[in-house]
Image (cartoon, rainbow, N blue to C red):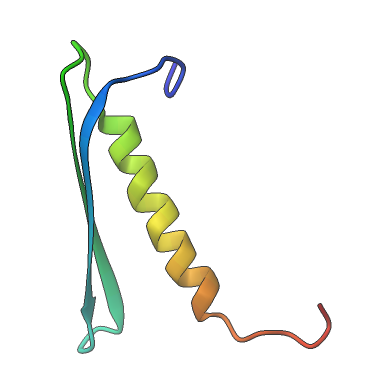
Length: 65
């Protein structure tokens, strides 16, 4: 079960790079652990949350809220 157990994550890095030519943002996540399991789902989650945050903060604010 993804994200269903605690992990000893020893390093997290999330980098963003803007590309004006394509009006896009690229995101890369790197994680390290000493556990005997991978941290792929955690890295995917970091990218998804990071890009969702950029998307959400780039939307115009609505006066109806």
